[in-house]
Length: 183
Image (cartoon, rainbow, N blue to C red; front, side, top):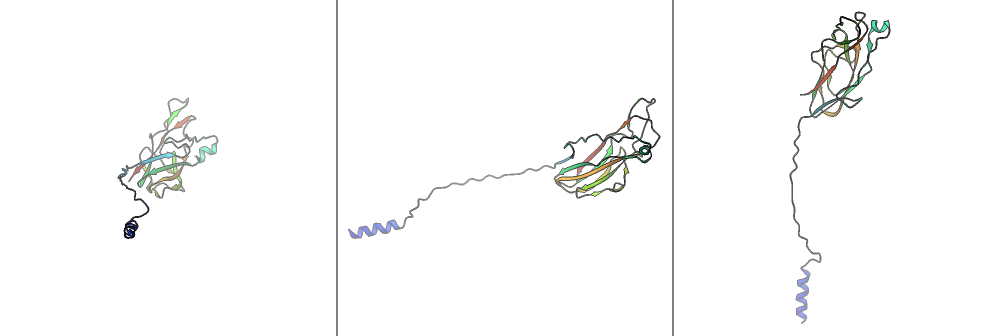
């Protein structure tokens, strides 16, 4: 009997005290399908339609020297490099007032724009600059070239109007249109 116990003891020594747990694995592939995406908004209201810019001519000096706006900031969010262009909605301002016949004020030679700040990583396209106003028209003009992709690429612009003494009192309006295009 002594021998039988010894054999049983050896057989038990070959087993682990811990029970083995069965396992199973599963896997799943995750695929990201990215599309080109770009958005241009005004930071003041997080909208693609900026707040109205009112350039008031109240004194003779305003007419002689022109009136400048405060800086207006725009933000581009893009997953690719981009360009920004600018143009006006019309070659002439729309007039609202009491003068008849309705005066026709051209945008060209009256409304200018400068880039007040550029945080896009791109370059300011000629003829625009940070130091001088360049005229606007209803033809697309490149404003920013090679802006870097990112989620917070900002730039600021300012306007200057110099209508001189040629036009009668009233309200003259035009839309300025900015377009961001991926490269």
